[in-house]
Image (cartoon, rainbow, N blue to C red; front, side, top):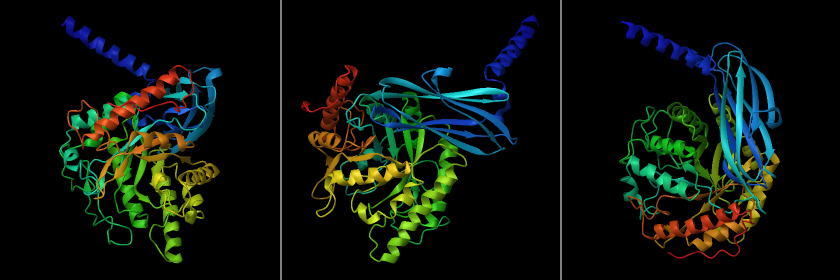
Length: 485
């Protein structure tokens, strides 16, 4: 009996201490505010960019609450305070706070800290980032990569689609670790639904949508025929443990489709994805999978339809961003376009970029004759992004086309040339990792043997650049010669 009494006393003591340590608010369940800290760009950056810091706060209680919000760099003290705000949020409301920090002089590893105080307690979170010295904005590294859970084109994915369909959840986690090993610490999930339809050539609605999900969706239960039941959970959980970030692909409704019906579908799917996976620290952003041509109207030939597509894409991102801010304030939204005919979209980019956090264009190495050069297109898009405070990242194509349209790994020399010649991008991702790169010790090789050769060649390059960074040398890789296997 005495032992039982002592056990009860100990349990009550532990419970009391827990409530005190967590500032009492955590004992009230739903009243705990959700806070989120996002750095754009995340991870490794150069000392030639400005860091976009975003704090998101959700008041989960039914009462109006006052919050004191502090953003600190490398320690919570007065001299480390970057920004302070005192805000009052009605019950159920959200707020996003922003601060811009130049990275010059911050070389090395750093911590950004978000501290939120309310009347009955304090909660905090932090993000790590590394600043490397550079003579250009770009890191000259591939900072992240797309992952297609099954390639959308059987022709393009000819050499790996059957392999990728057989990937187990553990093998997806293994692939994430192999990306982390070479500094590809950000992942873009290309699409979480498969639906091969195109704007203007379908009669799809939110109600009759028949696309197939790559995750256990309750909205649309049709599933893709892949082995892993929930690759999204597998990838996010592994990224959590490694400090990586994941951009969640909201799509595919239909290619290039930004109509009001597509907007309603994206809202519903984004909310489901947030409810299912928003608790993961690695959930970084929403990526809209539909893509678009650089002119922002695709193949439309009449001025009336071109203007209509321009209006649709601007309306889409304004309303989508407004909607996600009601439950995930501070989370960025990204779109990938190609880099061709961008001047034909000059009048439309400002309206779209007002509500698009990150533009990540591709195709600079294959600009058509008579168009801008890849460098000219990059500089033009950079100017438009700078004018409205949007971010321009680079979707580097790490593949080439065979005569039958199937994809194969691009030579490392061409990849390195892109990394050095297109120097204004603050972040570089590549398309894509599966089927193009393979760790030599992977339990399942996705694609042909040359994928292993490219992984090894890029790993050598990655270690060369990062070793020069550690030695505080210039990271200009003019003397780098790819090391053969």
